Length: 70
Image 1 (cartoon, rainbow, N blue to C red):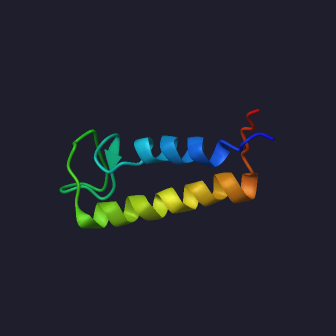
Image 2 (tube, rainbow, N blue to C red):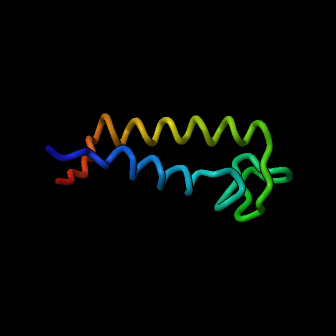
Image 3 (cartoon, helix red, strand yellow):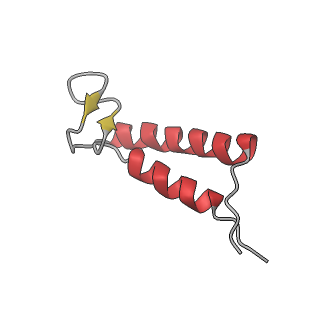
């Protein structure tokens, strides 16, 4: 009996990619989007959290990504 690693892998990858300020920040201090500025704010954390939830839900529930082991 194997485990389903799809949700775990997707969650880790999205967490890394959607960390505010790491690759991009939406909204930024002076512009709408800034890339690689390594800063964050409360509103950008909220927006990145909503993006994370939406993309994760689409990938796991709607598309049904599964990685089986075992």
